[in-house]
Length: 220
Image 1 (cartoon, rainbow, N blue to C red):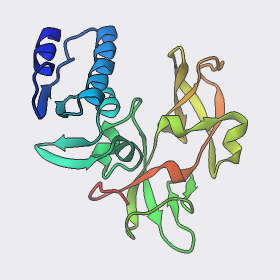
Image 2 (image 1 turned 45 degrees about the horizontal axis):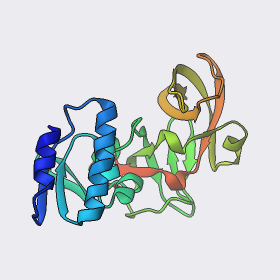
Image 3 (image 1 turned 60 degrees about the vertical axis):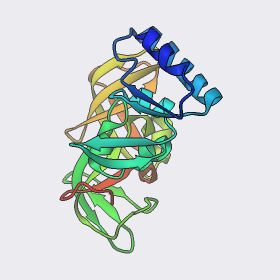
Image 4 (image 1 turned 90 degrees about the horizontal axis):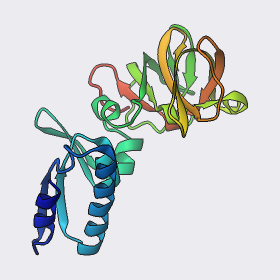
């Protein structure tokens, strides 16, 4: 597999086509070759069309990403835009590890827009709407955009979460909890002490969230 990549890269061509070139390599070698391909791209400045199911490869290697579903391009944009402003719920759920949290509810538009569930409301004053629609919707927030502890009460939205599962990852700790009975994931510092059954205060800024229509799944 590495020889095949090398044979392709030594040719003087305008466009390289890669079809999951790192898929069968071990994790360490995959990381090393990913960095090497990026270096080569910067040096050669050739166009590279790269097919992958690995979102880390897509985000780290691409200048622009085309996310496809059932043969149709869902979004074609730079990695930062794909990550921060996914065009629909499918793209939002596809990009990100751990995956984005989704909460079902309704958007109420008025002098001050809010997202309402049966148990709590989230103010949307800082959210940049892409459309004027309201009604049934899904609210998405990434686990890495959630803060805990003293910082949580300073956020526009804060709420208690009951810890369900703790996954130490070394550099950080991934926590699975219940937010008003709903599954909710967030990240903490790897040195943080947290136990199953703990009740914690979490918070986030809805400006960093994504809202999607409950009917079409498109970004609101």
